[in-house]
Length: 326
Image (cartoon, rainbow, N blue to C red; front, side, top):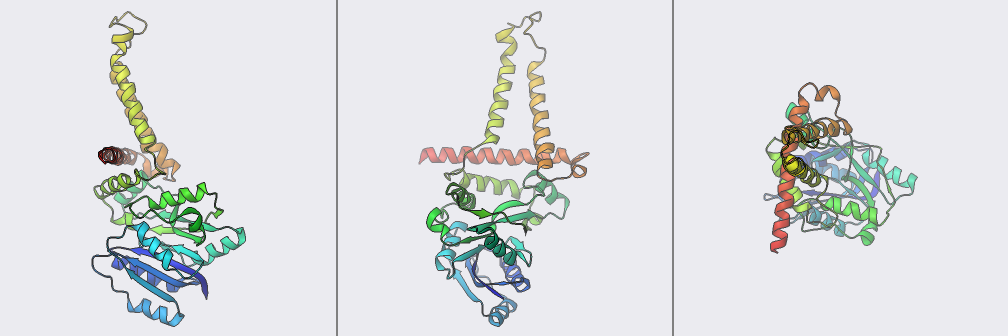
């Protein structure tokens, strides 16, 4: 059974993941009538014979569009402009839906009389290090994402296409524009799985975050937010603490304003607050279970979270400096 919908998949240097995703389509309860892969790999991927047979047996239109050095937004825009149907679905090679995803999402759009349905992604982690990374970042609860989303093509005439010059963050920018235009979007009841965390390392993730936030910070929807505020307020409090006894007590130990070891107390207080926030409260709010956090993992999560925060701050500062130079 076919649905009048175009499935758009950007791809780059992901031969195995791409074929794994394409071959999984044969297990879906309904198929898209058109599949567009926009690829910018250095070496053109080989589409499996198994998938080609599936296309032929089910009369599915397939477009493989080759591009050069395409960012995800540009690749998706090419797919949109070359699509032949009024309903568009988006997946990435790192995300894999279950077999009922397409059918249930289309049904939900009809039931809700909405203009689309957002993707819903769970981040899979099978080993200890990926689980630490997941606890420090996405958590175990599903997150609203562009991959897995299905939207009416006409939405792009209202909200515009994806930003093509950004290496990352173009999906969040477009999703924000959808909200600003008050487009009627449904919330997905199903979810996709993201598997790339299982190949991530404690070094690769901060590097990726620096790259992503460097590009994302330049997009209109993004503002350097609570991470910068936390460090700025912490520095300000420590600075006040350092000068407290000199300014208010004139170093008079008998003064009611004199506080012994105030600088050390403030530094310890900021560290404890950070551990409670990043190592315990935020992971719990994202669905990480207490038995994983304690007795010691919360400490490792805090340390790794700190490396991510440093990467974000450096990305914000670098982007700001380069923007001023421009």
